[in-house]
Length: 151
View 1: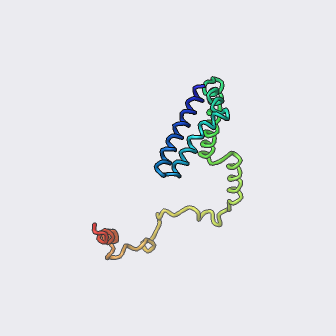
View 2: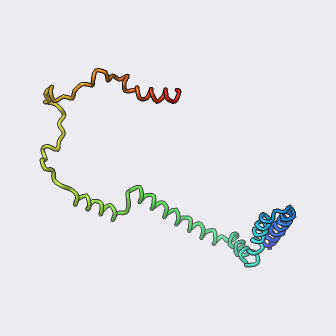
């Protein structure tokens, strides 16, 4: 009973504000305010407000909302764990099978290990940097950009 009275009062106040807004020749805003103010009385007339007030005071309804929230948390948690692991078990199994199918043997198995340069000759060593390229030249581009911007 109280909820219906409050909704009726809110609708009456909203219609009053809409009349004042229309008096100020702001008809579009007045129509919008009137539409919003008719919603609470429409909800009362359809019986939704009574159903909501009965639901809000029912411990069984609140327990049901708690169960729904727990189910939602379980769904979200399992999705997060699945995403972190990289998919479902079937997805990982398919990836492993694809990797096994794509595996090829090396042409020269002994050549796959990189050389650490233990027995290199001096001729095989990389050449030293050019005479003009010092560490100061590395920053010349940066200095040019800073000068361009006045820094």
